[in-house]
Length: 53
Image (cartoon, rainbow, N blue to C red; front, side):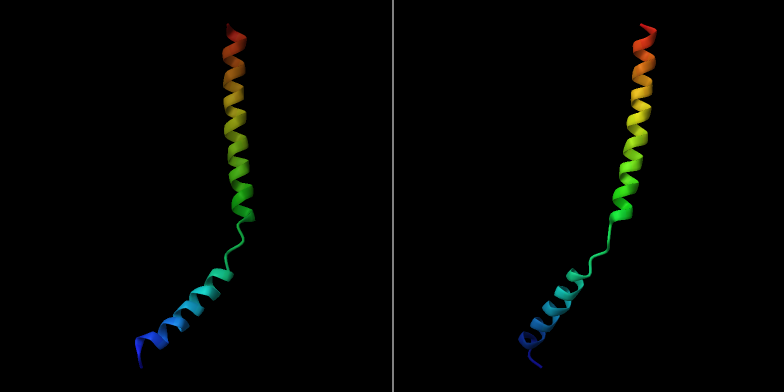
């Protein structure tokens, strides 16, 4: 076979793989929760700093 006839088939396979991307809602929620914890800790330390001055 000629390589040029195989290239469009390979492109079709990558197109199919690109359509089936994983759902990342769980990852997004986890990142939001970690960000909320970090923000809460930062605000707690800021409150302690302000209240002691």
